[in-house]
Length: 126
Image 1 (cartoon, one colour):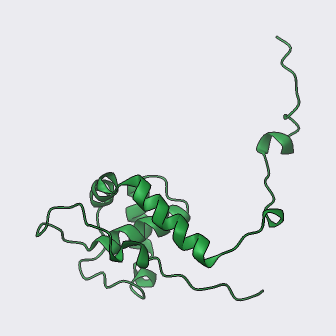
Image 2 (cartoon, helix red, strand yellow):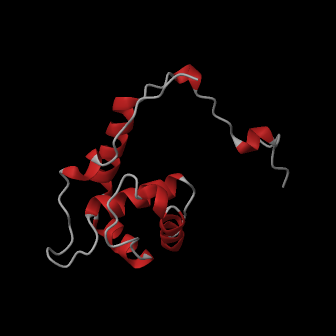
């Protein structure tokens, strides 16, 4: 397997304005956001699952993040991500991935679940 480029997701947030109230933030923006991204990439679908991911992977996350205050609560994740502008977040994330990985169209195999189950061309009879 060829070596993949290393990317730094911390770059996504280094210069991003923190929308939270200055002086009332226990957790750095970078830490909360990166734990959230990693959790979602690993299948987390709720804020509680994001918190549980952080707690279960705390030793691994500590290799990359300071985590001086530990893992944020699910409420902290919810509040921060509700304040972050989704468009800015998406643009930065896509830019970071596209800058580091080039995927050619023919390398991608799209699988439609309906096609796999033979339901793609079934006509409705009622």
